[in-house]
Amino acid sequence: MHPFLTSIGPIFPEIIVALGAMVLLVYGVFRPETEANAEATGWLAVLVLLTAALTVALDPPSTTLLFDGAFVSDRFTDFAKLLVLAGSAVALILSFDYFRRLKAMKFEYPVLVLLATAGMMVMVSANDLISLYLGLEMQSLALYVLAAIRRDNVKSSEAGLKYFVLGALSSGMLLYGASLIYGYTGSTNFAVIASVAKGKAAAESLVLVVGLVFLLVGLAFKVSAVPFHMWTPDVYEGAPTPVTALFAAAPKIAALTLLMRTLHEAFPGLGPQWQQVVTILAIASMLLGAVAAIGQTNLKRLMAYSSIGHVGYALVGVSTDSVEGMQAVLVYLSIYLVMTLGVFACIVSLQKKDGQVVAIADLSGLSKSNLPMAFALFVLLFSLAGIPPLAGFFAKFYVFAAAIKAGLYPLAVIGVLASVVAAYYYLAVVKVMFFDEPKEKLLDVPRVPGLIAAGASLFVILFAVFAGPVVEAAAAAAGALKF
Image 1 (cartoon, rainbow, N blue to C red):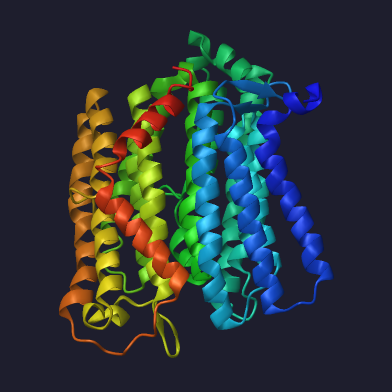
Image 2 (cartoon, one colour; image 1 turned 60 degrees about the vertical axis):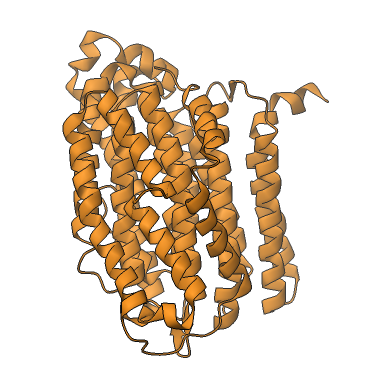
């Protein structure tokens, strides 16, 4: 192979996704604007994502730096990219039946998903404040449009606008923090920032600490950690359901892995400072995610608060500042991805004559009309609640065990208590499905979302059997970070 091609090998997956988006954009423009052509574009986009995932999987397990250290490829980035690509692909597949029923499928939709995914992959590999921001904005700009993709729907347009305004605010805060960090350290490269931030003077520097806090605020917006979560319930409710599935899965994983790398690669010397901030974010997110969802009547808003709570649990692992904590977070994200996409596959599958099921009350008596779907949703919700022996229990177990090993006992106790409170609203949905009388017969479940829901349920039930490879891969990925 040509030396140049060998040198840019680590960035092949991003090139494949970005070029795929450009090619499909041109393909969509020159083809007649029909539902069939738009769906064909969608399946081609899934093929592009699978090709990129194969390229990532075949990437040799070594650390490679590109573009003067701004882009890094190692086992950590490979693990995170596989999760991001899987999340984007499944969310895209879920959209076909949904938009076909509404007669609203447009070729721009899969192109935007590809562009957002390319941004997420750059975020995961960012090793410089500039590449961090480029990836973040590439993802965000595409997601703003995806939230408002249904121009005939007021809630969708409102969701896009809210997401855009608050996203712009968070980007401004992140840039302000980055400018303070650059002003103090004289560089945007993580390795140079780390070498400057290791000294005692750096830990006592108000400029650097304030810059770090603003950077954390910008990233907390992206993962919807409390108190920077205010956009999440409205955007989740207003965006089309497959778009909400994408929001809940891939961008969360990209932003959390970016947060992990930024803190460990750029600010290892400021551990005590950022640990305080991350711990507060974790506690606030777990508690609000547990309490605020109790009064919800809309399934998508309930999942929004659920995702806020799960970000809090993941941040418990981040706050440990240890290899075990990072491994626990990666295992958590892997399980969270499957659980969340499984629940949204169930939501997409459930249809009434006058539209989609979005109210919890619409699930009344689901077990009597469609027992397999009710069982799948029951299993997935119990897993989200962390009830053993389902996968969600192991996710929380790894995170809390890492916190205890790091001596963060109060954090682990608060996490367990929040899990107990959160179990109430998951059980409330199960009660409606199995014990309430049926209100209205739901339409037949489409095959593809039904299969995805069934696959996610099987994963959740059988996770204990094949947990070894996931845990080992997470351990190898966490080991690539510097401690």
